[in-house]
Length: 479
Image (cartoon, rainbow, N blue to C red; front, top):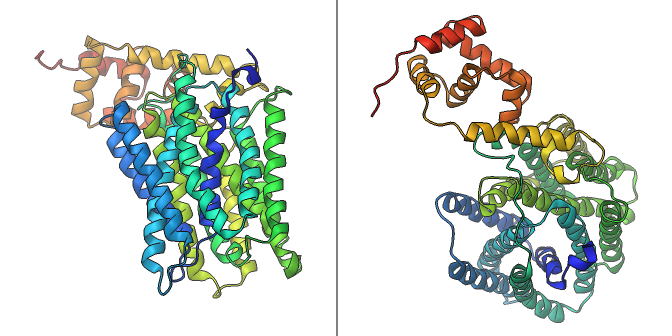
């Protein structure tokens, strides 16, 4: 069945979440030098941290999830009122409270939609999310051009549309097909470079937002049409690339496009007339939108191929974006006016390029498995995924046998780390360094480092000496 035969109108409801957060955060006044965004994204980070801690222990039942949906929608509606409506006098308390309520509500909305997208294979979720990006951009432009009073009414209705369409979509969504598990407690650490790269970039965008973008009115019709028009064209282009053209989707290559959009604006910043500054910096807003879409899609794909709950994966990954962004907006407000914009721009270009080079390169092992269902350019990619999955499946079948008991006893005696203990067991079972690298989704150089530390702690120099140590280890008494 083709894409358009499977997609339902309710599947596109994610665009209501995009519309709400953009339009709400771009109309708030400053709160004693800190914009609404700082408070909203800080609240997001705190709430997402709480979700991670809770979801690691238990999962909400269906009735409780629906109750939280209602509470989250109410929080978003209250946020619109508190941020948008003039109440006279000092509005600091109202704006902070509204921003925090909005951050909590929209975080839960994204989690609920991630739970739906994690059911889909990347070949379906990728074109779907790019289609929502294009439609959401049209919606954001329409809302931005409305009279203020009408805009508030529309923003009040968007939370109900977001959660209502999500509920309808989940009722009619197909049962999730079994997916290869690539990320579990042994291998999830392979994604640290991706998380750090996102954090560095998000911090940089937050600084740009406060230092440069906050001074540019977001309500100018020409800027609205340029910004959202660019998003729409980009969304349609990526949709066509993934679906009709059958192109693959690479996290690193799409990330480079995001970096290119942002750095292009900042590099040419000193040479642009002030009257054209808003048009140039609209590229930064477009890059941020694409980052949100890419990150959402990547987290849904990681959750699909993970042994953790979707809420856990999404909350942890989204916090890596939300918290640095909040810190970036706060830092931007501190340096604004005290430092030349060109110097800030140069520092941010340096940081984002550094992040792209060192954190999100093609050889980052964990990153290369994101969107593995969509890899078209590498004919061996699928076999690599299956090989890694087979290695992890083998590790998951370990029972309490003699080798395992001897390795645990030896690990306790030599004070080995948990990772060194697991590698010791694989070496004792005759597994190669390449196999161990696949099993933990790490590089062979990292495995060699672990083995070097392992040999030093056990005072052995060869594989045979290691096996002899394991064989001679005293077995602990059977309980």
